[in-house]
Image 1 (cartoon, rainbow, N blue to C red):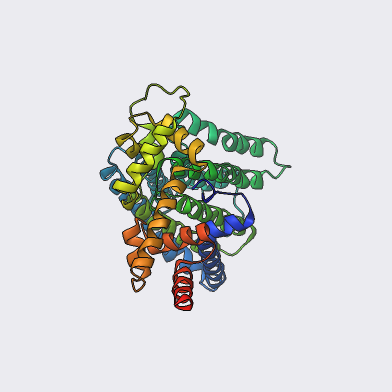
Image 2 (cartoon, rainbow, N blue to C red):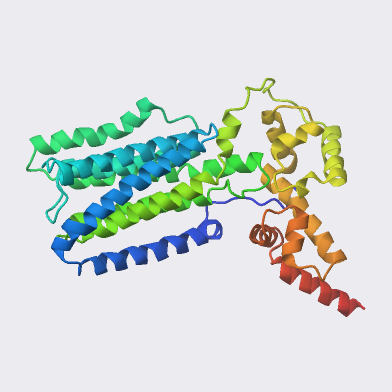
Length: 398
């Protein structure tokens, strides 16, 4: 098993293998946004200001407030959902203030029209971008984000606004615009650590892997690119597409957050464990674990976790992780899936007529797609092809 572990690399091929679905999602969404920007140019200007923008801002404000209410109501004590709810609440209040300014009191504090944005309007836009990064920050680094650190993240943008006012000869607008990109890059750099830590503790990445975080950050990045286009274009229809993109991300992300777990948050909220010192691993312990795995087959449960090994090794999480890594040369995720692949092979040998979905389910995989990916990476060929080659080989021998 040590030789057949599913090792993660940083190669382009590995990235494509893990995130190709997200790449296609990003490209399709980008094409749709570009098409909407082009179509928005044909909307009459008076219709945009009198009808479209008021309706859009009202929809965004109400959707944010409803999303905040849903996330608070179903937070279940999860900081990721609470942080997202606070972010949605702030966004909804900011957009409500914009509605009051533009359509109720008709103040001239911030005007979003056909003219180029000023630094104050840029700060407001980037404040919304910062709000959208609260959720992935809390997910990738549980309990790292505090109110003090959140304000420190906003500080560079806050300083650039008065600097832009006192130094009008220097155009700092794009510095304000690009600052959130720095935050996005920093979050992308945390994804590999997040994925590895999940693999050290869980046997299934279903609903808790890095796929959704990559997709979420990609949407925020696309939102930033679209925002830059808004800055460069003099057509008032530019804001219409941006608001539609806002609405899509709010609705889509709220639905996803409500149905996703926060595994690292669960690990960090557990009672502090003792005996974290280095301990020697005996062959008897290894034999005990392997005998238990073969007899009880706990890996057939898709929710099989590292701490389930305490049934035979009553040790803390640190020692169990060390045991798997040093004994088998792989993460717990790879360790469990190696057993599942062997189980799948035995099933296909005993029941060659069984469909791949059934093999995946009875082997402990969360889905057929995950089964196909893991099996292909473990053996070099797809499970369907492996089964056909085995059957044809048996026929040749007979």
